[in-house]
Length: 204
Image 1 (cartoon, rainbow, N blue to C red):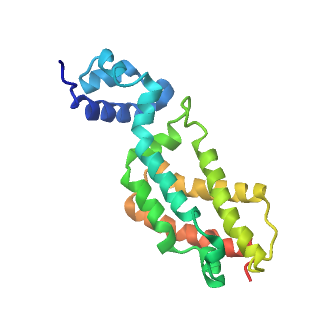
Image 2: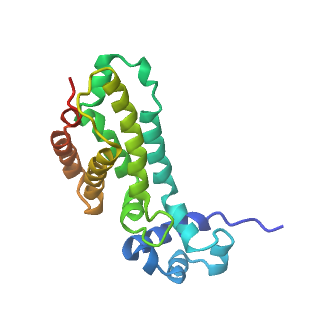
Image 3: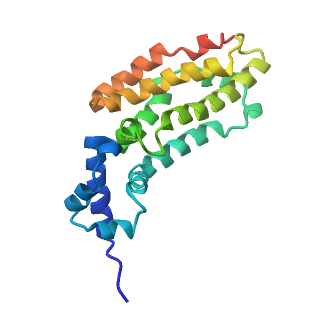
């Protein structure tokens, strides 16, 4: 009985990561990925159905962490929060924002591949879909704030989506443009000054 050579997997993923980063999914060459990993195309097809599934394997870690990050912050019993806690949730601070930047940074180039090299994959609309999830989370907080009279402005789903698209883009761009760690931290502070969510909802 043959033993599966598990040493192939990390080599293959790393080779695919470099190829996707340099050329994007559409122009990435499976043969080049195999050659740089020192494996045959047959070895790839024993593990993955094709280039698309290999792309999924490269980005699955960051995708899972981003989903968990959002779920942790949206899976809240809003009715159990005090008025002060509701108000605090709308105030942008470096301490509340920097964890998402550190999370993305910890995955290195995988986030850039997911966001900027995904044309032609099942993740092509990832940013739009993630903003939709963010909108849902924000709207739950907003509905509770409005119900209590804490939010004075009426903000529609479409308006939340537009604002959060801009917000998400502001989070993504430092990684697309290869900012340094220090630049990313300063960018986080700038975002906190720029996005005044308390003003958006006319917080009382």
